[in-house]
Length: 319
Picture 1 (cartoon, rainbow, N blue to C red):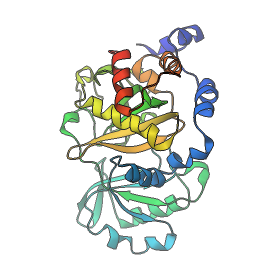
Picture 2 (picture 1 turned 60 degrees about the vertical axis):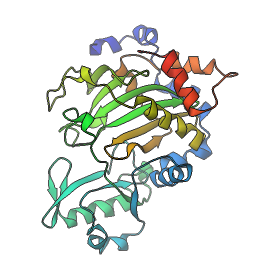
Picture 3 (picture 1 turned 120 degrees about the vertical axis):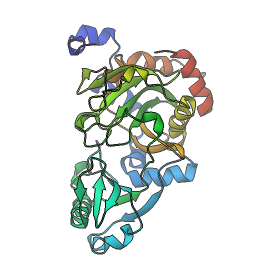
Picture 4 (picture 1 turned 90 degrees about the horizontal axis):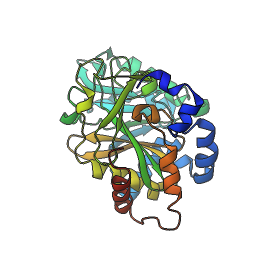
């Protein structure tokens, strides 16, 4: 699918593309109570809520709230060969630092670049000051376990762990994509930074379409592996985990970001009450028909996450 296919307004309508204004007014404003936004805008609150509801997520190591705590940070990092450092209120992958190993007294990033403890301190200080947070407000630093790369993605993600974005509407998963890290994205699964977006079928987690920077792609740009071969095992369990996030937060329209850990299976990475629209580009189709379909179930919705997942796997099969 070429980029030109997304230019004409009539073609966008024919494909059922959800635009930003429609998303904001008809779905975010209507189905997401503003009082619930802090549950997902703050990654620390999301993590603590996931623990309360028994939703698996990477283990929290420690949290930094004040600048003076950075002074002796090497003592807290002494036993950690790998970890992920995140701003609690960051967005779009900003401020995330992934350390995959040590080299003497230095730290090795997922991109294989080497940094030292002074770099870590500087990054933490900037995070606390709000450099990466929404609106530039003061933030906290989260240090959590690094996800163990699942072998099923070998050759499909470069210098970083891929994640799965699933849009959940009123408890029903309605669209999914796999985001694959690249050298251009510095090992992060962020499409705006150059990660590859792979649209996935809802009935089986198979590749539908793939893009990088909005352009169609057949092979991973760093490894050369054909993206059409992607099929994610245990797909129903992944969808159920995403569906549970509706029951956990009460938010009717959310983006759920999940990862597959080699040893612990699907894990919740973070939630987004204002998920972006590029998932439609990755899938080569629009969200609107599915959202309207779920709205039509107003009086006969399935009750459990498992029932909701089974419904969409049947209704949106191979699409």
